[in-house]
Image 1 (cartoon, rainbow, N blue to C red):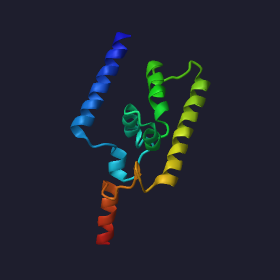
Image 2 (image 1 turned 180 degrees about the vertical axis):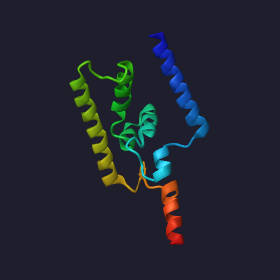
Image 3 (image 1 turned 90 degrees about the vertical axis):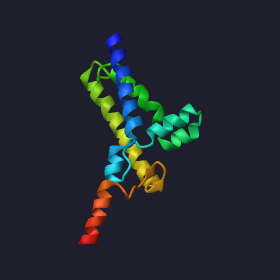
Image 4 (image 1 turned 135 degrees about the vertical axis):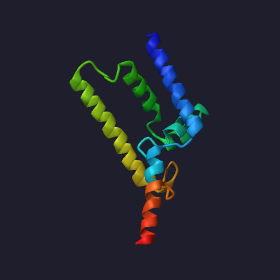
Length: 135
């Protein structure tokens, strides 16, 4: 028990330190210019901490689900249920819900509504643009 708590605290400190010192944000977004399925989740939690729940749901509608599910998975060592079949069904439902919400957000909000904005200055779009100029 103490070891699990110590690992969790150490992990949170490492992640916090990386975010604070590197401050690069989402690697997927900075490479592709396209938001990832989790885009806006941090801003959603920050808004919820300010009790601004409208903004929190606008940033990411699944924010109230994410941390409890991750904590449950961590607590159960990556397996939600003892029965393998139930575990696969639950994990599949989670994946479908998150991807579905992502696709709806991309359809409705992309490319110019935060947090689903396109970054033309990201690595891949920049390289593509340079290649188009050359060719």
